[in-house]
Image: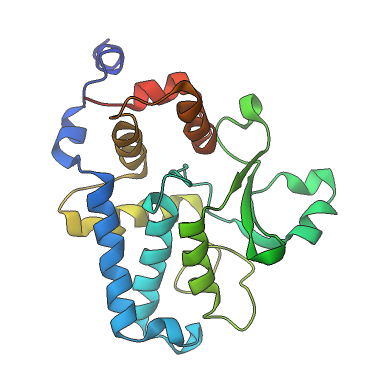
Length: 226
């Protein structure tokens, strides 16, 4: 009853109150990782030559950017985990059964889009394609330049294995530790929606962001906190 009441009046839980911040503050954190990497000249190196700390901060910068860089790509759940990177040609000739995974698709003219078919509400929404916005596209391009060949997966652990959902959820809290808050993936999504809906948005704008976050506009309204 307490949970339902808190949800309906859209107030923050005690945990949310203690750890609430803003998307701008989270963006500042990712910017500090990028600044460190620039100062070390990491973007001009090969990934294999990076130090352990540079690789860790590169990972933090990439994941942080995926989740808070821009409105064009609002934070999804842990669906970037295990995500394969493929060409659009390969994607369009793939058997329907193989599309039951999540992909970053590299299209002509260096454009990209995400294909989501493994996520919480897939039975309601079906396969979702989300264009990579200009800002996130620049991040991905900078990251891919570190490799002689584009990686097979979007996110890998520092030991080189594809990152799993549990590891991705855990690392998000580590990425944003400099805020002094315990920012979970779920809290991050609540923060984004609350910041986004702070201004009076039109229904079309709300629906566009809700679609990209792969939940309904009704759920989006409940995500918003006072």
